[in-house]
Length: 272
Ligand SMILES: Nc1ncnc2c1ncn2[C@@H]1O[C@H](COP(=O)(O)OP(=O)(O)O)[C@@H](O)[C@H]1O
Ligand SMILES: [Mg+2]
Image (cartoon, rainbow, N blue to C red; front, top):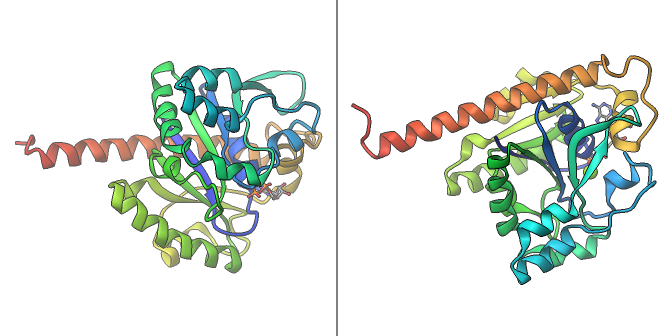
C-alpha cells in the first residue's frame, strides 16, 4: 500500500523505537528498512539483543545495483523479526542497515533504485517502513524520503526538539514542493504533552501532526533495547497508541493519494 519514512531533526527522539513499534502494530505484512546512516545495526543490537548478526545488508544491495540484480538481493537480505514477547514470529521483515557509519558513503547510488523497488513492493501486498535516522548525515537516504507516500518527522514535544524540527521542516517542505508532494510531510510526536500538545506544535510549526505517542519508557525499551516486555505490554499506552498511529498513517496516505489523483484530474482538464 505505501512507503512510509521516519526521520529526525536532532537528538534521539525515538525514530528506531517508533519505526519498529509501528511495523509490529501494522495490520499487514511490512518490510522495515534500517536506512539510518549512523550505522551500528540498532535493531540487532537493541531489539534482537545482539543474539544474531545480519549476514547481508544495504551494503550488499549497493553491489547488487551495479550487478543489476537488486530485486533478488533485497529478498535475500531480509529476515523475519520475532514478535515483542519473544518466541512468536511477527509479520515484519527487516532489511538490515550498515554496521558502521563509514559504509553509508558507499550507498549514494543505492537510494534511487531502492526507492523504486520499495514502491513496487505494493504489488506484493507489502508495505514499507523506513528508519532514515537523523537528517543531514553523510549517506542520508534522501531520495527514499522524497519518494515516500508519507514522511514523518519524529520529534519530542519540548522546545529543543521542536526548534530542530522547525528548521528541518522548512527544508523538507521546500524539497517536497520541488517533487510535488508537500502533503506527504508531517510530524509524529513522541511524548506529547511534555510540555506541548499536538495542537500547540501544529500551530507554531505550521505542519500537521499525523500521530502522537505517549511517554512510556518501559514499553519503549522493548523496541529500543530489547528489554523484557513489562506486564500488560500489549495493552500499554504506547502499544495502543502505535495501533492508533498505524491507522492514522494509513488514512493520511490514502488522503494524499486521493489528493494527487484530484490534482492530476484537474490539471488534465478531466473534471466536468
Ligand atoms: N514513546 C517513548 N516514551 C519513552 N521513551 C521513548 C519513547 N520512544 C523512544 N524512547 C526512548 O528514547 C531513546 C531513544 O530511542 P531510539 O528509538 O533509539 O531513538 P532514535 O532512533 O531517534 O535515535 C530510547 O531510550 C528509547 O527507549
Ligand atoms: Mg535510531
